[in-house]
Image (cartoon, rainbow, N blue to C red; front, side, top):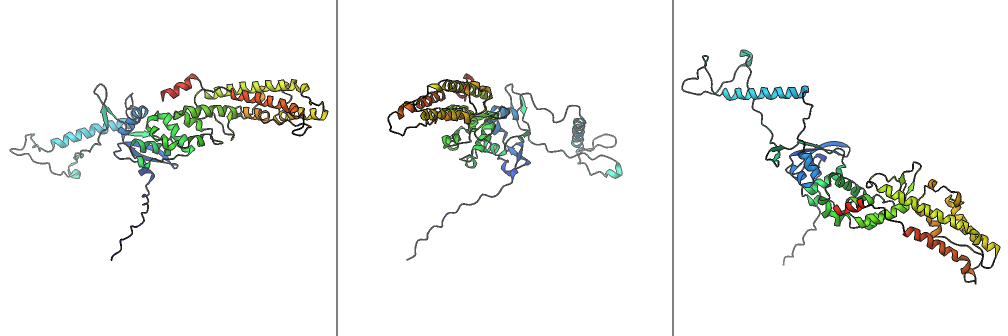
Amino acid sequence: MESTPTPATATAVPKPKVSPQELFTFPHGDTNIIVTHEGKVITGKVASASLVQCCKVWENFVYPPFGRLPQEPLGSDKNNDEASEMVADFADEEEANESSVIKTKSGDLAKGVEQKSKPVDVQATGQRLPKQRKRKAQVVGRLDNQGNFQEAVTDIDFKDDDSEALLILFRIIHMQFDDVPKKLSLAQLLQVATLVDQYGCIKVVRPWFPFWLADERELAFAAGNERYLWVAWVFGREDIFEELAVKLTKEISLDADCECVSTSAERLNDLLPHGFIDGILNIRHATIATLLEMYEGFFQELPNFTCHFENEVCTSMLCGSLVHPMIKLGIWPPNTYDRNEYLGSVLDLASPMTGLIIHNRHADGVQGNDSCIAFGDEIRDAVEAVLSDMPVPLSEEHHLHFENL
């Protein structure tokens, strides 16, 4: 009895390696694109109809609302030469058409028959041979609202755009969905978001959000990923944006040039919505002022921080517990410190007090211990209340942005 053959284990067939130019050459491509990929300028082809359907900006690239502009200034030698060549070609074509019927020397038509012209010995006769009729490329265009033919441009320059992000968008609009990555790194998301914002094509990428943003919270709130704020802004993730905005307001500090920097010392002025950084700085400044005023009040209350048992050593420990964190922050004494000179973050200023540990002379459980350290709880609660009351740095303009996406 013959045994049933076991099916062979399926192995993935590797995709053939393609050149950068082939990567950017799409089916039915009728418009040349110029792209910088892997440090080299290459030329590809895209379907103009796909660009037009994608977004208004690309439609205007293909069909400029002001009409096509000449490649060279009007009146230049190049345009004059091209015009002369066009006139010569037209005359030669007319001559070629007429040469199918030979005329006699007297100018009369050959009697009875139309003869095809014979080759002419140019060297012997000095005559010009008529040029061959050039095959013209198919003209891409459409009818405008007035019924006039509008010719499409033949070349679009994308050299300044990130090529990987551009390739993702091109694959989507050319319906090559299997080649669109299901997962993107933060760097890739930033580049795609930049092009989406630049060209206004949010509707094109929205179907991929369930894949790209599957681990959004983990990615957005990871340390050093403050730039995800830009992704949330462009992709319309308002809840994430608000949470990140408050977190960023608490964490940013200023460098020597008074530029906003993240916890990883990265400047944040780029890739932030218009007017957003001003709102963050205003809230940061107001919160720092509130905390420093609170610390001034603590300083004035120092004489009242005494041991419940009037133990001098314990009283010194209580006061030292409060003063030492301020010295470490460089804001001691608080009533002489210029709040405009503080370059650190709100959290840096608040954390010594939110994590305040009051040292005292008495052991835990000993009567009077709770009374000696009770003011520490009051300080922590007061500082935490300031942090929780910080407003969200979003204006009406920012909320309107999300509503319009």
